Length: 524
Image 1 (cartoon, rainbow, N blue to C red):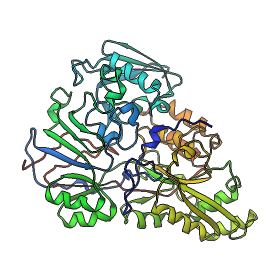
Image 2: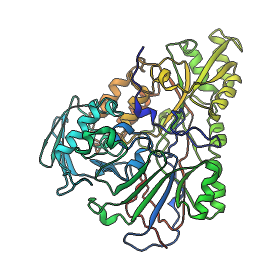
Image 3: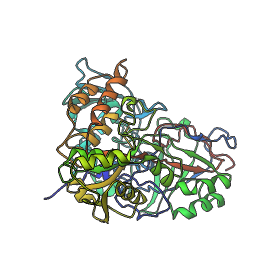
């Protein structure tokens, strides 16, 4: 069987723990922020800074882009780094709502089947090409059709695109009010159409219309950028230069921050206390994510509903939080953290941790302790796998952990029986739901299975304007329908911990995004 592996999901990022993983590996547990109050907002006040361009951002990133072409890079966590170079039609504010970026405004037709975006006038890409409707049309069409696109699966509601001057009309195959949320930094970072004529060259020589311009890329190692004076919001970009570096071993990041080699970096939870003791500003980037145990209900033993329910009751989420995130993460039984609009309070703790109930269900299904033996296949050594192994052993299920460097192919081909996964979430909640629960969702190990009523619930969300009074409940009802799925058991929301020098001012608290608007660096 030949399978096209969805690169969007191949780019998801592992939760950072004490175990150092091979860079660029495809992994099962993703790192992303929890939508919780941060340790110090998005950084403590630190030193005050004057307005105007100020100094160099020295960013050590565990998510250094393998691909600088956004169509190939996909919508995993590396979109934050690519957003230095590329602007999008929309971006999100601190509430997670779509707000203008390259598009200054937009409106739907009365039927909800077309949305027209009006672009800002006079903008250019860093190669001098105009940012106009034709450029955006080309970007969407390339994302839908380029052979190695990681984004084609995100754009299934879009049938065609037309452009006139600074206007872009997106014609939809179904009513879908999620489009402004969708065409933001995760899914539509717009590259120069001239540069995109050579995708291989663009992949290591990015050309966008974002806040910075790349002056040098050392593949897999370092990128140097300077402020883009032609960026539409350049007046609120107060950083002159950026040095983006592929992060070294986790144990050396704090010392690099202390000595000034870096002034901004992501951390493993185990390094958080050391960073705080070093007088660094440590905070949790707000966002939405969840890690899960993926089950294939098309294969034994998970084709038995009682076995699935036994697994649900065998999971102690607190152990994941305590052991993997040192208490910085949050337990979750949904693909969203609590307080996010899509989180369904009615479904909270529906399958509570109850190992005795799990044993009872297995007995009712006719299984004695030790009868069930199943392989848990993962791409590399992960502490989470040992927690799953231990918790299932406690109720009588024997788990054999197998590491397969080529895990992605059988996972996305839906050939595995049991695995682990997680995502950084999406700006469109519907995109998150369909990826997990839809019949062809890349994270649904049980394709073509989907829970009854899910399609109808998602269609209703698409048909509901985001500002409609009933939108939150319609969205939560779709989450509720999705959670009937027997293919996923959610465990916890890993934290995305950031440490920075106090010379860097607070960052905007945009969920899952790293936004440099208004940020200053003092003492440079």
